[in-house]
Image (cartoon, rainbow, N blue to C red; front, side, top):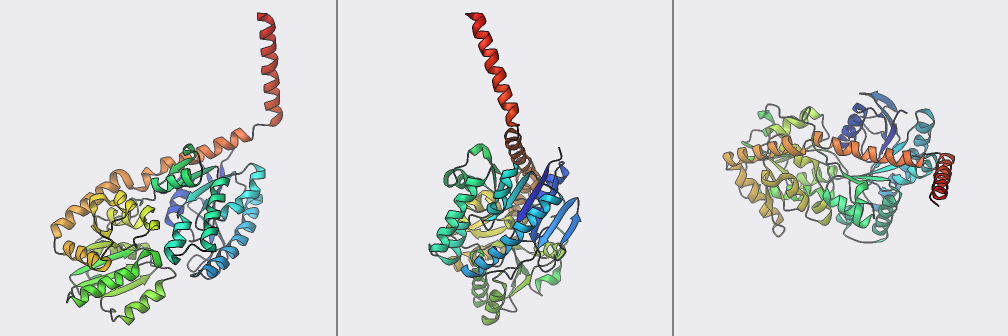
Length: 424
């Protein structure tokens, strides 16, 4: 029987969502027939395409939300299309497993009716949504409680879970009540075949000796407002020799650009928005230091950020706040700032590295080696495949025909009876 699966991801289109795309390609390369359902947004407007053997379907999507009510509208609209598309894919292509990639944590509702047909559900746990909500709004209101409730239901309906690190595995086992045997850590590392250093481009330093690089989503918990304040702090100190370039998109991008303008930092900070991979590699390969200003909070403490491994893959030293999973990833490839003086501490660590080229070289080499030997995507594929083997093994046990099981049990009972009579 062909192994057919459907992956549903809501917050980013595929193949732009690097983790989901790597998962889909790895599964296809290992014999699975893979369909992916993701949103249709600017730059990814085809309703269907076959790319590298993966069937990609894209559903309509409203404007990205940036408030609780905005998220509710966005997720509700997306849920309707995911539900309709999933049934259409089921009847036209078929699938035995659905993989739901959060956020949000309501995708299990799309998968729930298919359980009547023996379809198994794998929860790909990207974000701890209760902590994510709290980091954005700093309150535990009805919307926060709904995130807790949805997370519990998601784990309750999951046959297997994949997590990005051990902290998230602890959530799946402790808060989610899953058997540790059903939880697989699938870290999100860079693919070293495609994500590798390129020659630096001096023009990207905007005529300055030093470039500080950042890549990631532009939203509240990413701490980009802190980074803008760090740039202002350095400029106020008379350090006009440092430029900051931030690559990526998100709901906070417009506000951050306005912040740069209001602070008079157009000559010091620029936000590129989403750019092609080659331009991203140009920026980060040119950078002298790369940064992760993720705001200290519970969400960021337990989450693994792909940008850390990407910086390390390019051999770049890192400055970030002292957070649990950040240390697990970067170890000695990063300097770590305290949580008391966020702006001053971060600025001090950047300057310390910029003034010590030998130390930058040493830390960059450590990071590159960690990725090559432990953290690249290739080391995650084994656990990805093991998670699917677990799901299909559960499905196989469930799909044993009832009459076969009854017949087997009757035969065993008869044999036992005969054996007992003989011995008597």
